[in-house]
Amino acid sequence: AQSVAQPEDQVNVAEGNPLTVKCTYSVSGNPYLFWYVQYPNRGLQFLLKYITGDNLVKGSYGFEAEFNKSQTSFHLKKPSALVSDSALYFCAVRTDSWGKLQFGAGTQVVVTP
Amino acid sequence: EAQVTQNPRYLITVTGKKLTVTCSQNMNHEYMSWYRQDPGLGLRQIYYSMNVEVTDKGDVPEGYKVSRKEKRNFPLILESPSPNQTSLYFCASGTGISYNEQFFGPGTRLTVL
Image (cartoon, rainbow over all chains, first blue to last red; front, side, top):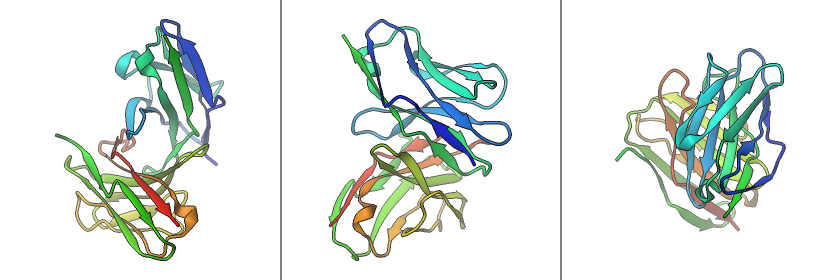
């Protein structure tokens, strides 16, 4: 069975400090992994994806994610967090079927000035 | 402007009264999908469509129907809504080989009394 887990409900970080949001997955075959962000009262926005190739993927708004096959992880990172990065972040994995996408429960990021 | 629109944005109804939530995209995307978002559960996929007249079940299809008669529209139908269908609903569309880099609508908050 395919699954994705985000072990932290909330991450608190001070502005200017590094931000990491954790995601682990379980899939059969090669994983297709995604990060989305949801700002208050908005729909989700695509941040980045890993399909194949380099383990370090760069995305929008200065975010990047590191794919680690041995640890089955796909952690989202940003070197220097901004207050405007405060949002709900979702990790997602594509399952066996092209059309099916499974999301984690989400991690609330709070960046304080 | 490229976008996914949903109507209505807010709806309060009573148990058993049939309703339809419309979704339309202007990006000529082949793929469309419906999700529901519940606290602590993240997003769960209800139905998806790979193209016109092609639909398939997601993880939580019970109590919902969809149709895809035109490429741009993908309505979600609740024939007999129940209180456990109270949720925030998102429509999304996508294209490309992965389909999973999706564009989301603004959401529809449904309350079933």
